[in-house]
Image (tube, rainbow, N blue to C red):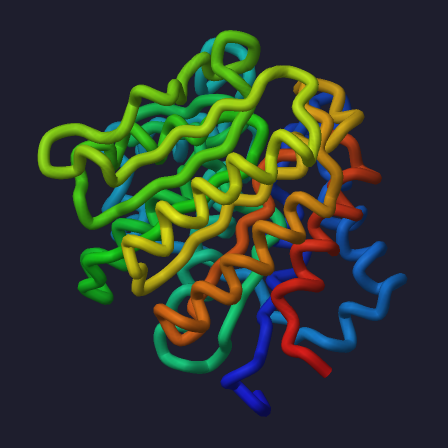
Length: 319
């Protein structure tokens, strides 16, 4: 790898694309291809370093998830039958390996950034922020965001980790797992939980105990546009900046873009580009550029491709 100080990694490969629930499910099999086809069309593939997906081991997954839950995923992965939750997240054969590959690719990205091999990284099929420590939820089998945070804490001994989430859905699986953890600051801009799954993420929820004030929820009303997002983003940026993070995680779900079939926000890809650019600047000031972007949701393939490419564009070094 050359010029590692400015390298941006992008994780692309069939093993990562395998995470999905079939053609009839919103989280279908075409999401990675839609993004990468557009990235190639824009010539972004010539400006990044492509990294191959890799699978996380059970020890790494177990830093966040409970052993009984991991065993349940393995069991249902073999049969490919039934649901992991109340109906959103169906089992499929090879599910364990696919979900472990999402987590493993994210961990590999973080390790390479921590070792100075790259500055930024983007993992398109990732950001599965609803899974709880002991259960699946909302299309999410393993919570790669939570696994990554525990990895940064336990393996790399970081104490100032920033998690930023601009997916339309509140990142409840991350928020409540670390609600009492002062080492993790969270800024989450999402559609108001009174109108959208998972029904959480209200402004008064700001952390618990020693972590009070380290968490920031910024709910937007249905129909919110970029004009509504920008002042909320200014609050999110100030919140993260004051924390002086050692590592920044961005969950940049494209389901907040106008025209998504299961949400009600009306943002444009410019909102995500703006957020990414500001976090890249902050990462350069605070943590040697260490920023990992996770694709998150997005169920309109055109929106997803345009938005993730806009995010990736901001993560690239200036020519």
